[in-house]
Amino acid sequence: MGDLKSGATPLEGDGKRVLMIFGTPKTISLCHALGEAYARGARSEGHVVRMLKLGELEFDPVLRYGYEQSQALEPDLLEAQRQIHWAQHVVFVYPIWWGGLPALLSGFFDRVFLPGFAFKAHGRKHPSNELLRGRTSEILVTMDTPPRYFRWVYGAPAHRQLVRTILDFCGIKNQRLKEFGPVHSSSEEQRQKWLREAEQLGRV
Image (tube, rainbow, N blue to C red):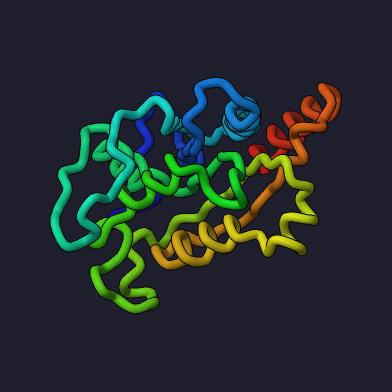
């Protein structure tokens, strides 16, 4: 995997390397505002932040042959893999839709987190098979469902999928998950408070 302490250019600085992945097809959203606020906080502490906005990438989100046949990666996905290798800390920002991940984000994982890149093919859950081991992650999510209801009544399926069956399987250890909601009934004052919270999260 290489030395996770190197990779940022001299112009970027020598702080922690943070990659923000915006998992929404929208180009303007509360998720983007929260991510930008987080980035401001992180940069104020000397960290190096890069952004990957899935809604701006060009790729087929469907893994058409499973792992039975190879499917050529589009240039944007090859670049995404390079950015993930570069990163020490990956921050995922996305909305909860129908209790799960947005289809675009799910398709991104299908296409990018492949055997040989994220984990060893047909490998069981074992440190030696976790090819992205050594990285950490953080999750910022927006939702219309009240967060407590989402966790205690629905069982937080999106959280369990991403943290347990994707990130942990590939060796990425999630450090924090922050929920912002319910969005549909929030006031402008509440949203500004959330933005301040996101900026503070970036400083930690």
